[in-house]
Amino acid sequence: MYIKELAISNFKSFNAPASTIAFNVPDGQTLGSGLNIFVGENNTGKSTAFEAVDFVRNSTKKSIEAIRNTSNPNSDVYVEITFTGEIEQTIDGFSQENKKAVFKSYIYKNQNQENLFKIRRDSSEISRLKLWNNNTGGFINEAGIDAPVKKLFETNFIWADTNPSDEVAFGATTICGNLLKEIATGFTQTVDYANYQTAFNQAFNDPASGLRAQLQVIEQRVQQIFTQQFGSASISFHFDELKIDSFFKNTTIVVNDGVETPMQEKGNGMQRAVALALLQVYAEELIKHPDDAALEKPFYLFVDEPELCQHPKAQERLLGALLEISKTKQVFVTTHSPYFLSTPYLRSCGLHIFSKNGNNSVTTLANLNPILPWSPTWGEINYKAYKLPTVEFHNELYGHLQEKNNAYSESTFEQWIMGQGIVQSKTWIQEKNGTAQKPRNVSLQTFIRNKIHHPENVTMQAYAYTSAELQQSINEMISLV
Image (cartoon, rainbow, N blue to C red; front, side, top):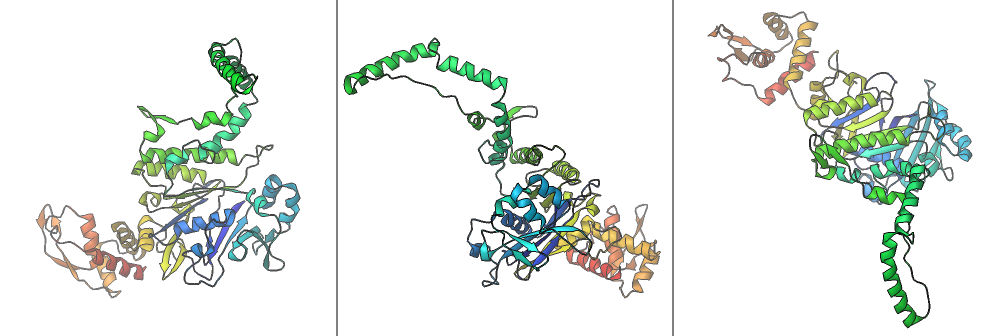
């Protein structure tokens, strides 16, 4: 079961009417098929989309006014998640018995005969989940479904401001604490644990132990004073066994990468990398069915700016891991890193560009209205998402126009582009064997192309192009594609 769509209305930076984001789902084979990458400038709603998913599943402790879009103070806040895929199997495997028939009655088909299941949380009854009834065309508030719905899928978030040292600690609610909880419970049933119990009681509670001999002196003195002051009574110390989770609370992770060091003494990059690795292992344990090893609970991983504190090679390795995971699991990341946009598998991913239109967050799929036959590319995404002109995108556009119009030589290209209304506004001086040739008029596009391709040209090194000219040249070529 996968998340097909997320609809957000009046939630934080998302205005009304609802914005709908359609997600990629894994195909089981292709690297990146289940990876959804959110790109865009700061404060455009990328992390807010993560928060919206969390809002549906877990509600919020904030007041509704804290999450309501300020442009519509009187309108309802709502977020809807539409699921697709093996919905019935998920319900059969992970729903409590008395809710299976209820949930199945809300499964419906779209025009493509896909099975769908839609849930919603809104400000009218923020503590209650609602289910979409396709027969009536409205949401129904079934009693007692919040907890059962949550059992159908798991979400895990690593936020940009998450302290990685907190996640690698062993508290009751941390990744490590949850990861070891089941292991600890099972360990109490083993022979090793029984032997520990015997040894503990022999050391601390057996009258013949050395510790008990020393304690008896204290016990007798306390008992003597107590009897004199309050009356006859027997006083003794008894040591209860430590609960199994007490041991794990005192556990630390040690990393040996040439030097053995406690985890908390490593840099933030190393700590974040370990936290991500632990999360993946935790997810694998979390989705296991208690009785059927072949059945896995749907799990959705949300990582906010995974490139934080990671050097370029580490970012590439992390992307490789996420691409592999997303063959079978849905993964959602927000990023500003070029390394997450320079993979050859980018075309398999769901690439979502976030932007702002006034006070409203807007999302578009990068593969809608592609500019190049091989879209999307790193340069194209940077231009669409950040309005950032790059030499890479300029090269791609120039080469595409050459090929498209059979204008492979500079002179042929210049003749063609002038025929499209582009003027020759620049001068270029070619060098042959280090000797400057006769100056010639060229278009801005060819001037920039030559500057990029011929940095060794000493004659032209004093003549540069500006960022505004790079943007102008790109815009003009886009209009000619």
